Image (cartoon, rainbow, N blue to C red; front, side, top):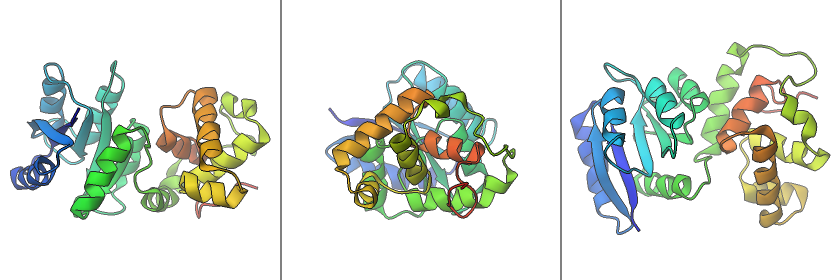
Length: 225
């Protein structure tokens, strides 16, 4: 079954370009388009969507608030934030709102397609290095915590799970974590799944955000020591 995609951007030419790229793929179908967040939410009431490509800066309802409302709903589609700049200050808010990752609007077509497939399959971190750079920039703006993490679920993590969480937060893929810890990728994936369950998080992106918010990882990507 084809991945059902909705394009949300106030620039018609950009939507047209994305639609042409996606339409050429046998496993993807553009089922809806919207010029702002409000229209996107309205479309979801009548159209089944798997992945939403969401612009951030739009009239009426911006992409961050639209993402929050979409992700709070039942059976929510995955949301990929589209940004113009690598360090768009809105992108971090989008991740906190529930987006599964973000891409630059000038991303090569192959990377965009891979990202859509990746998010659809549940691998939420689309561009770990970019996510890390953004969080490194904006983590000083987050509320500072004490030496001990404030999220009660972190205390439930095993030593290995905590170790894996720190590496996820530093932008590492499962393969990179496996190589670092001398584990199989399947084992790393299992650890990530348990971390999500124990912390009641939706996906890997939320793991990254939580690690920064609690002070487990500080600006620069290092552990809090």
